[in-house]
Length: 159
Length: 411
Image (tube, rainbow over all chains, first blue to last red; front, side, top):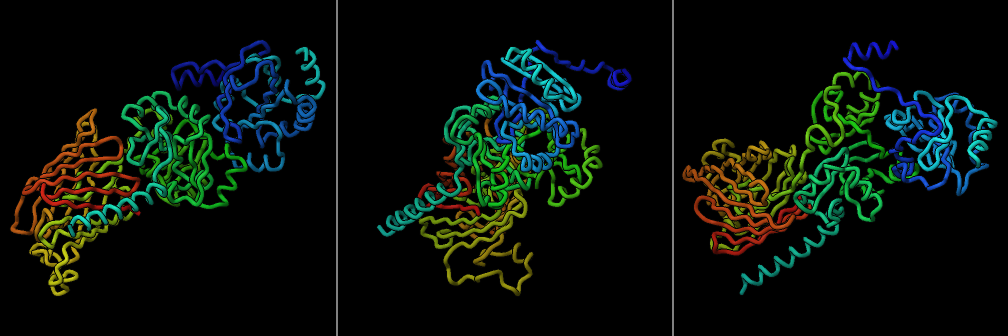
């Protein structure tokens, strides 16, 4: 509220309303590059395949905390029907490279150093996770997540 | 017969030069709009940290209307459509031709100063090539504005903005305290490819030296195409002085060059300016009997939408300046929507104090060929030139009477 008031006073106009994505909403565009240099778009995603889109950062302690759980889940389910898309919101790409050398992720790591995808997806904090299929949000979660949460979501999606 | 043989040998030699140049330095990018091959003399634009070349006039406007669409399309193709202007690992300005290694990735060529940098790039290329959507051509450290990214010494990305630096050393200062520097250049931040129209960089044979008939000099929109330029001209005149002419220029900045020239083959002349003479007196009164003469060119202004290019210079070409030193200013302006560039000069020289008004026209054919017709105040000369990246070779018909050729090489 205070931010809105300040924005109205300073800028003379209300800030754009924050996007809050829920299950059933259309997924916004990806529009960012991965660490191999490939630009990802929604239409790059395979038909009927489920993607776990996780916004994270190297400096995020909660991300580190849930990483073993998420990674174990992804390794178990990855295949023709499911893939992980890790979206790094690090603006220091040298730090990201260090992390990647250690973690050696098997899935695509997308980069959003100027937070353009983050803004489109209404993400204000990390970690933030979404299950997406055919351009539609199936499930979303902000903050910590457990193996049970992921399995429950998986079942709820009928997978 | 002797003249014919000499000319044939010279043309054979030129063919060899052309071939070597083509394989070493000619761009290998294709037009992102039409897919046709391009050359260094093609119309080109800066888009972010990229230099993009086009095959035809109009392709540049089409590209700029939807750059990401064309770059994404190019990413799927085999041939590169653009050159990255920096070593993406060190962020320092680097030409493709000067790179220790070049990697083509998704339609773009990236130059590397060392094999180690190329190796680092291969590990996570995307982390080096992601381009922010905004940029500032105003150096956040020195507050100087670079004309385009090719004039920058390097860059750094901070908070979604790419900042270009004017000088070496600015990057280290910026990285130490980025927040301190960015505030003062906030007003210079613009969207990549938006705001002010990106600078066009057109290689062309400059109608620069009205005192130098038969001299093709390659230049970009920003000045000379190379740091050093060597030139040789042969023309089969009965007079000895203009027959052989050697020039060597050094670009102090891309727009300001100093050099020397040696004309004639008369053994009676001094090898250099006589040491006993005051340089300025000599310059003023010389009858041209020194073998090595100074020359200089200042590209004061490239042509704009509503004004011609302006070039000042001095030279001592013996074809159009029989003795002494010539001083000239040349104005040139391309006819909009055409490849025709008329130019007019005012030239005066120390030989009889004669002042004349040379004039002429450059006719462009395709991207690489130019026919120049120039009247130097006394005679008309014809020059047909094939341009490469940093080399030009020309066939000369001097005084509409004598055949010759010239070659100009940048390095």
